[in-house]
Length: 290
Image (cartoon, rainbow, N blue to C red; front, side, top):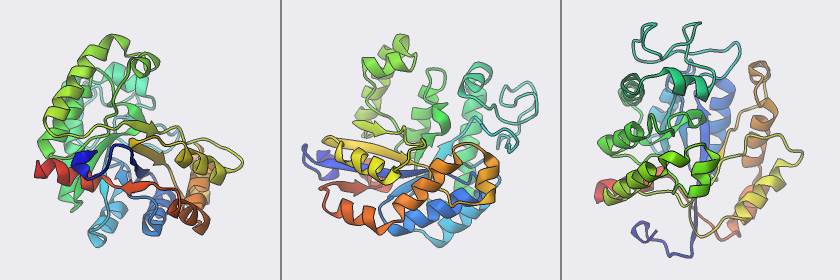
């Protein structure tokens, strides 16, 4: 916190929009909330069909704080995408239909670490080739945050000199994620990242892709409950549309996120909440400066 210029008691929050590129509705939703100013950054699904629209936005908005949403899954029933890297049937990257796996469990079971590294690197390189000033890395559906891929994920962040979404993993968190046996290795990786001037997240608010009646009150409560330290708060905004409804998954929640984070009421509320909102570019600049 001190390296970022904050006091230990400061409540610092990264307000992050996920899934740019997922569809046109998600793109418009994310562009909208970024321009309102509460949301400080977001990350892009590079393999997705609507990636070029995000890349064009990034080129025309160089101030936009955008990272790569490292992706080894495609969860939709009838809307699919495949890997960026060339991958044959023996690579483990593709399911029986030729696309990325629908679930984290399937992708973690089938994809070999060397194939995952090749694909994740290809996604970062494609973002850079399209003119995106990549500020950070994170992981779609949490798939990469797994003992099989975690060291690759961290090493890519250090190689490209960008921060990755990496919380301070506690014993309780590891147990809940089924990674209790891997905790010593995770803790060693956390220590290594910090030795390389890579910041770790103190807290997370990531279970927001839910359908509640009053999403504005829900988010006010999330902001009010933030503790001192650095928190990553995630949302998934998308404009209401037939396209969004056709995707099926969590359409109402995504539309609610868009509506809440473009309402003046939330911006006015946060103006008096005593929070420090930053993006990942500030963390990247700190890393590169060190």
